[in-house]
Image (cartoon, rainbow, N blue to C red):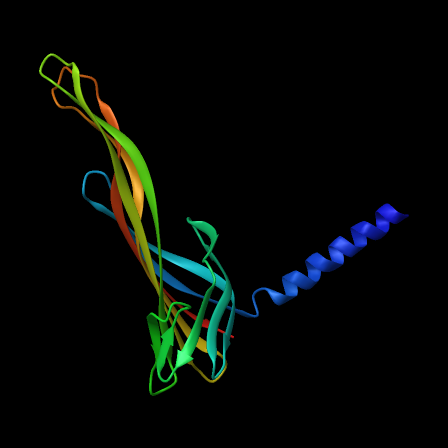
Length: 197
């Protein structure tokens, strides 16, 4: 009986959490572009849904939950964003400006994240003997810009992102020498517009 009671408590908690997450929902279209190793780009037009929690007051703007689901890409979450309102500007915890509130009430802000990939790059001489190995770092940046424009029923929501993605390619100093696999930075961008309420 205790076991059943525990299951019911957990299920009840999960259901209440699900009701809190995704207070605003909607759907829209996304255009996306992904760089390939040969320098060309793959372009996609996608249909997506979004569920998010967005709160705005005189003191702060918060996007504390967001989930996106796009055909062909699957689903993902963005990291939460919390900004203080200072006049018409939006600033982070360090006081750095990250966005603004426009005269018509539209809220725009940007979130930036980065990560690094460390690797060893070995170089070979003409006789295919390794003569130099250096440790290198590849930095990957993601910049996401959000816009919330009030409408009669909710918001016109826009999410634009530029993102560095990592891919691996082989490099040879000489044709007969061993190939070295190194990570390389690939660009991608997307723009998603939806009506949410």
